[in-house]
Image 1 (cartoon, rainbow, N blue to C red):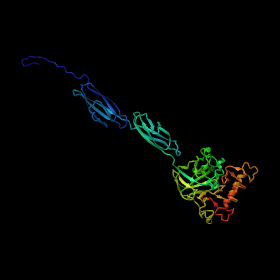
Image 2 (cartoon, rainbow, N blue to C red; image 1 turned 90 degrees about the vertical axis):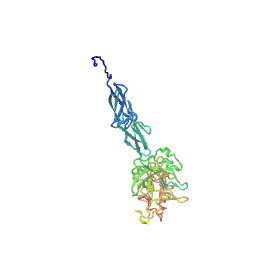
Image 3 (cartoon, helix red, strand yellow; image 1 turned 30 degrees about the vertical axis):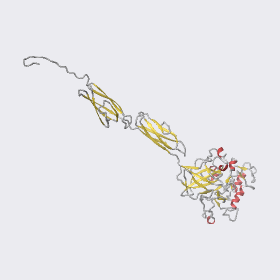
Image 4 (cartoon, rainbow, N blue to C red; image 1 turned 180 degrees about the vertical axis):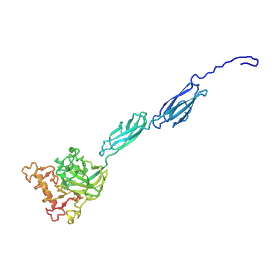
Length: 466
């Protein structure tokens, strides 16, 4: 430096800069679950001159949480792009960017389902499939099963929670159904074994061990006259020893045959079942206790028919509505209107009036008791004493062909067992007097109300079924 007199002096200055350039870098943690807000960014700043200040802005759906715009690090982030400007003590600046992502949404859906095949069964299953989120997945059903496919399910609603590797969850629900079941609370009496002294039927067949464990209507000779419809499995007593050990009013008398007929065409049989009848007339299922039930019917309204292998059947006059709790059909006391032809029987014609003759009135006092007419030993829908096509011939055939009757005597007195000719269900078929089944059929014919002249040749004791 020189002044006006030429005097001089010198000075020097040393300029410096920050040792390292100002820079910023980020690491981040992505959002764990779709639509979550647990992402974070860790910002590292080097160089420049401390102290630093920060200014965050977000784009592409990102949101800088309230109060964090000037923080070094960010937490509680949703997915998006986050840009930061870092300013040092000398107002030098640098920028950094972090992109926080999220997984696809975790979804759970029922992709396979098997409903229960029988009422109150437990063979249903349901399979859940998970997509999105972060594999691997774990499963927990509300019945405690922890696999993708829950098995052994009964009817009901089942919810499964799927959890991914980040503990994100999704749920799905399966509704397992079962066949609709409707039941009959049916009662019927059989005239053959009925006793007015006890107001019950005898259970001689049971007491002597003659009732078969499988229903007889699928086997000869009955299968020729009884047709099973939508009834693929032959009914079998669940526990013969226990069921046939029961005595008293609930002792089993025999098998009966149930038909459900179309509500618009009472000649069309839609469904059948074989069942057991107790001494008091209650009709029960093969466990000897439960009501008789049907599953997966096409309708719930039917005419109800009850038949027996050597008694004439009966049908409701009106359509019955079947219910899950059980529909009462009581043919024993006159409370259930019964179908009859009146004066329109297709064979007897207008000269015979069958009103009130669908069943036999076995007692009038102190209360009405109605029972199926006995005597139809050949199951041809009528009772007939004299040939041809007569029922006494079945009795004779049973006796003559009995294995012990080696000399083929009609008076053979040891034809014991389960036979069509045993019209009073005593456990013995007998052709010749006394106490013979042939006489029972004769009496049935002679004293039938429409046989006004008491002719043994009377040929119009018809079953009142269309």
